[in-house]
Length: 369
Image (tube, rainbow, N blue to C red; front, side, top):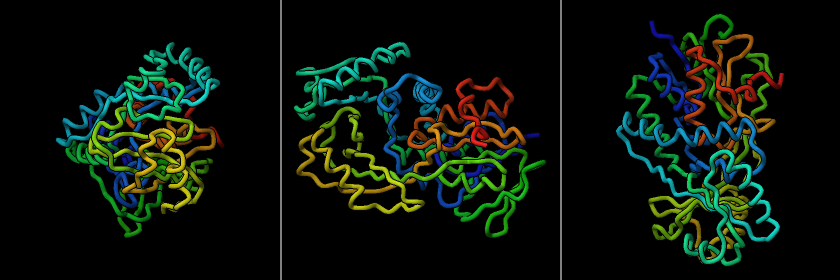
């Protein structure tokens, strides 16, 4: 008899986990308060860039990110095959640009330890850099080139994950508004605002920025809180920008549909997802120093999403000690898209009682209690 798994949250982590569990013969139901991918997942720039994002010595979080990047090629192929939907997966490579001699030394230090992890990192400067990215500002002193770093078009990826889940028999119920956990110690039962009840053998919490609402329910600290990330996009000629370009101020990501995504300014605004003039100005004030042509351009689209940040920067992934049938997979902050494959597989392995994936030792959900 199939085990019944309820997943609370239909963002990219919840959908990816549902997809992986459906491939392992679990009976899966996803419960979503609003619409799938409607918060951080659908608003993301879709970068798969652990080498650019993590500049210090490697830790378990870096290992999670790197392992997930290296799973992506097969993962995205599988999602496309099952969903019958295409989405952009661009192995564009990235350029981490700096403007001062002192920062070049920092890049060299980064290159040294990252090469031990298989990074094909190459320090580029001068005419070679302008040849790779002709529109880049001449003020850039040098850039680290990471050919392995990639990006996806997040909204289409989330749609494909949802379609793949449904194709594999996953039940997805959206627009529930409020979902309450009414039983979890011996079995799993949840109740929606409209009175519908859902029962199962296991519960996986993928509630993102709303996860802390369950602190009182489970009697554990869940320090996950929302960080608003504001993003803008420009219409540009296709191939005017060829790589992800990363700087100390943010990033720019060229998409195949002729848009350049610029992100992200961050602020604490509770659960508000409105776009502010100040937040977008934080982007437009510096991006022209990366690509001078942007000084004459105006974003055609602006948006915001809530990123689920944790107190120590590590996600919460693992079983509750007091109830092993309750599993957390939340708090991925700005790396939910990147970490979706490795999280899905790690959670499915936990349910299959396989040996725990070693980086999860730093992600225990009860570590703050």
